[in-house]
Image (cartoon, rainbow, N blue to C red; front, side, top):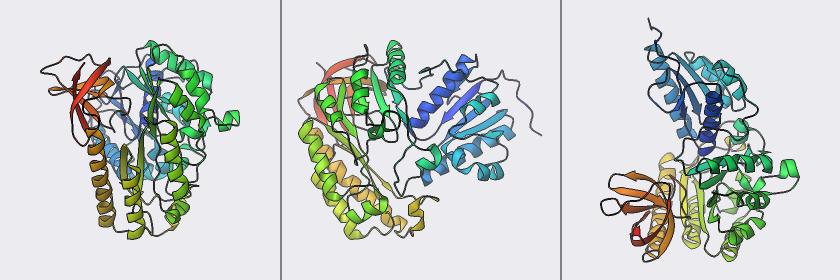
Length: 434
């Protein structure tokens, strides 16, 4: 028989999935702290555990389920007292989870913050606009400008878990960003399922550029980075702000998914090979120094070898500075689920590897061009003998890193410093302070 621990109540929040989930965990932790609760992020000593799950694709769902099972075992063994589950997986599969893993005390969806807080003996504080307990290094933070998505992409279950697009008012985001700056944040990473849709629901027009013009006015903020744009209906005035405002990084994360016309149509992406290529050329004409990150899906239902080779050739031609590739995940209740998942798993993996080999060579060649040049960098951490930083062209955790030998130089974490590059690999730059 399990025995209840005698620990003082401490809530451990465990986050799985994307930066949008991390943001939600930070909001939850901010609310708990305002209720005088002891709370930590991914620690080992909490006797109450809240798991913020991801339900996006197969691997993410498997990780979430394994994490729930692990903490359910810890509860059975008396190592923790209560386990609560929230987030996308819980929103999407709550009845199944309640049946299959009953040892969890309660499951909550993506819009159940108030009820989750009540279960944790806390009240929702309406006055905490922009207040959250950040888990990132003190010098950068994510800023979620909208929730949900109105796009009809056939492969994506996000609208099932997050609902339709809901933009946050500009004044609320400015207030939140101002508080972050006062706490030492220098870099804002704007996130949403679709940044470029921002404002259509509340202002009846796209207003991402207007938001950027307000955010650049905030003292202390030096970099603003854009994550997750959409190619259809891209607001070109955003590029004007990027070109004219030094604080807006010459960086854009725009998941393009594929380039073959038949697959794009089946994916319901609202664009074509020709339009997508023209858009990328526009980006580079407008902002010559822009670095573009994209993500691509291989193994979508009925993807032929010829269609994949078209994608591979296009990647070689476009020479994206940053790129990721993923295998298609067959998600129930999406419109693509009606199609047969007929590309063998080994073929999907081979195609991912081929794309990433192409990208590795492109990245190596582009990095060689940086040798001898000096870049403004911000440093996130020290890892072994090296201080690890980034240029304005690199986002945390997913992009290239700048390494400075800590045996020869000392770098202040969270500070901007000019670094001259003397060597480069596929995804790393090596430099020294100027």
